[in-house]
Image 1 (tube, helix red, strand yellow):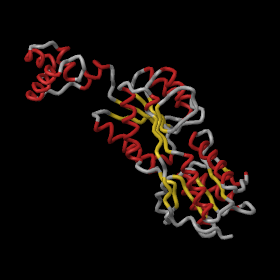
Image 2: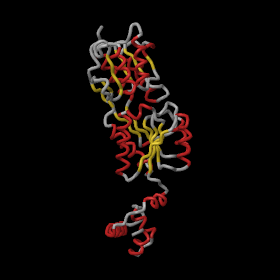
Image 3: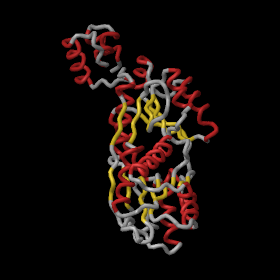
Image 4: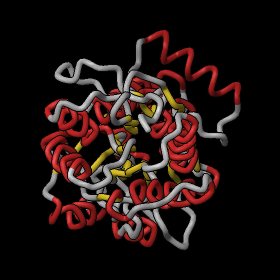
Length: 336
């Protein structure tokens, strides 16, 4: 039975029946009960395409993502996406991830917005100055940022507390007697990397610890660059007694470089990695700054985007969750 037949059977207009089925407030509760009961009795199911056209929605959420080779094996990224997928499926919606080249990312946003191919977007890997977010804000297109940026306008975002995470790492190492502490960062145009470095500099100063510029290396965002950065630190004289790695992708390379150099991790040099390091090639329990409940975080971003679509102001949709330090075998007393 289609909508027209249901309306005829009830002696109501198609508009009234449609509004009752879709929960419009102008339909009184008694009418809604009658329509819903009749629809259930005859097994009526709305046509998804017709419904989407009627309300001006695609029922599709999207991500435009310049995928790196390491992303497909990235447990953190996949956990967040799995959480998002669970949430959209529960809402009878769909999620599309559009992989693009970095140089085509901004044009892809503009094409998707102009064509109204999705109802809303999740913007990942936010930058300190992010032209994607500036564009979406300017045109008024619904989005939730997975991370923060610097922009003079309210926007919806989800993030973990970078300041707290770095403070946990520095404090833990200082409590173990470490003073010569290095920081390996992702590219500093990424907001999380920039903020974590600023937090590191502040925490070191507050702890009264020396800051050696030779111990601050960036552009480490995969195994190879992490490996190479750790080799540079090992060549320093004196070399650091502890290293904080601000992302788990390069953290694997850092641990591997130390193993290959014959360094006893946790005794000669201590290591803390931001993010869960799951790699069978390591075979060691790495001390981490963990971002708990990644699947739930993915679901939360979908929930926030749906609230945005329902009319909630973006400034009321700003979430910062707290990271935690998980002790492992890679941190020990300073050997000196």
